[in-house]
Length: 142
Image (cartoon, one colour):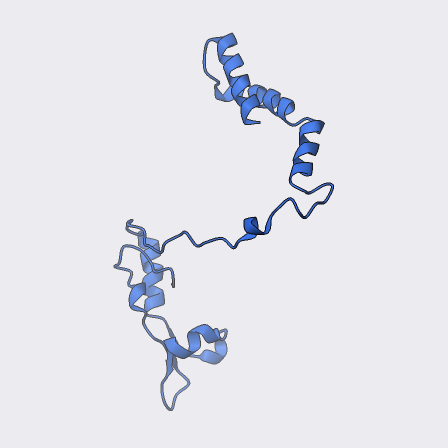
């Protein structure tokens, strides 16, 4: 497809003495697509990848290694908008006054992040210092 695409662009530019514009894209791409995706090439791709006819020896065990984590954890250097900061402030100061009227807190949050006041039905969520709305961005944990 890449080769057909390059060939069609070059032919278009040579014929029209200009680059491909938006209105020209469907014609140029369509021509390249029809040249690249013939029945013969599609069947060859299925055969080479072992899809049809099925061949589980095409992909080797060494190619099936688990992927390695490549991303890093970071924050965005952009200041959040006022509505986002207001929502973060509301989450920071949230206190559940009637646990029976609210949905249950997931167990992943209930143990380390909540505390019950003795002698009352009040459950208070502990403040997460990373949820400070004055910080440039919200924490991913939020």
